[in-house]
Length: 232
Image: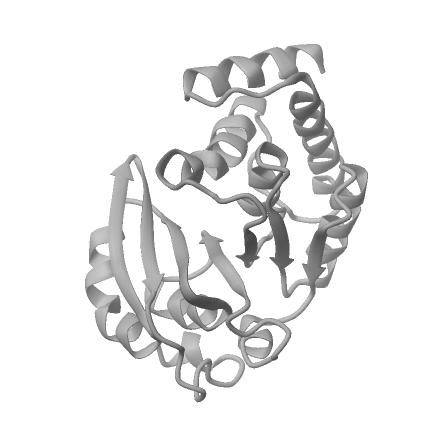
C-alpha cells in the first residue's frame, strides 16, 4: 500500500495535481475497495496499479485542468460505474456536491459502500435510468454540471445529460480519439435539447464542453431505451 501511495502522489504531481495526506489516504481506500469488490463484481477491467492511477484517478481529474468548479457546485455523474469521474473529483474537491447515477444494482451498491467508507455524507447514489430521472422534478434541470465517461456516443449522452442541467450549467463528456466526429454528428441533438457546444479540449483524452442555454423541451428525454435505439 505504501508503494501505491508513493506512485499515486508521484503521478498526480507529474500531471499537475497537488494532493494532501488526507486525499492520498482517501484514494488509497478507494483503490483497496475497488480491487476487493472487483474480485466479486465486474467494476473495471484494469487491475494494474499504474493503470488504475492513470486511467481512472488521474483521468477523472482532467476536468479540473480545464474548468474552474465553483464552491458548492451541484453535479451529477451519469453512468457512474465504479465512481469515475464523479467520486474521484469529489475527493479532490470535497466542497462540491455529487449525485452518482448508476442503473446497475451491484455497481450502485458499491458506490454507496465506497461513499460511506470515504465519509461522504453528501454523495447521493441513484440506482435508476437517466431517462427516468430526467423527467423527475427532483432532478430535471437541477444540476450545475453533468459529466459522463465511457457511457455512450454523444448524441445519446446529450439526451441523457442535458435534461438534468440547469440553464447556464454545463454538460461535459469524456471522450477519446473520435471526439470531433461525435461532435459533428451531435449538432442537431445538442440544439434540440437546449445546449450549445462551448469547446473541445483534446490532449490524448478529449473533453467536450456543452453549455445549457435554454430549457430542454418537455418531451425529452424520451422513454427508457429510445435514445440509444433512435439517437436524435
